[in-house]
Length: 121
Image 1: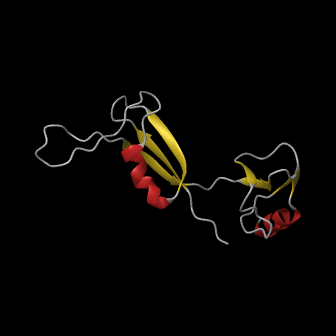
Image 2: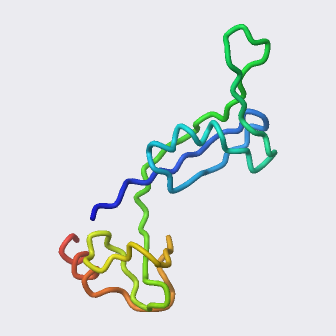
Image 3: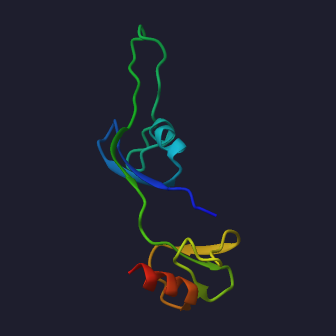
């Protein structure tokens, strides 16, 4: 089963100009994030004003950066001790798992994942 591409978006607040990051988004959710996410720095909430004759203007966070996530993810079944890091592994956990974005400090790496890494590199 192929995993969907995830995206990271960096927004700039319309109110305080602070930058903040929202991660692990499906592409169809990226455009909505700037419309609904409050700023973590000043709590400013975006607002959309309908109609060109409105005296108020829409207040939206700006998209500062958008990147496809390519960082490694490490998964293991909850309660297990074998970590997987290759999404194409036949044992890649799809449910009831723990996920880290940094290499785990305890447990073992999956032999199949290690073999796939050796072939690729």
